[in-house]
Length: 162
Image (tube, rainbow, N blue to C red):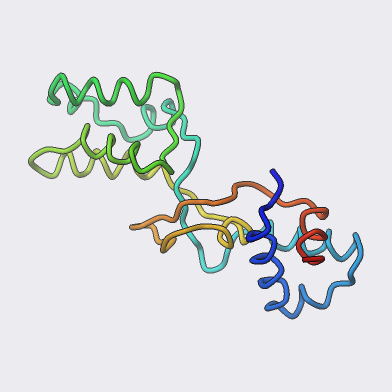
């Protein structure tokens, strides 16, 4: 995915703000060194919502099956519809609202169930992903990614030329 002009400008500003990156030569080797450096995990950790969570991962790890029988038909339908494609894009606000609705209820069991589900819906971002994310990036309030994955040296080279 090509970066937008705004993303290129953000990347260039970041590169110039980090002396080790700004000192890299203005050629493909320098761009590759920068691309490699910004593929690393952000430090301190910056938490983001996953865009592709396997329902199998959620169901096999921490699902309290006794609670499933206790939810209403409507809530069960919400969960079924959300999970029927096999993956969930939890970066979408409406998906998180659906999870909240399906697993809300009185008592700590439902709160724990929802927390168990959300445990599988977050991950730590790379430096690149953090640059383009929106939100606080905490475990309690993950950010939403504006870019996911790794940049190529060509992406870096294009951003440095802006």
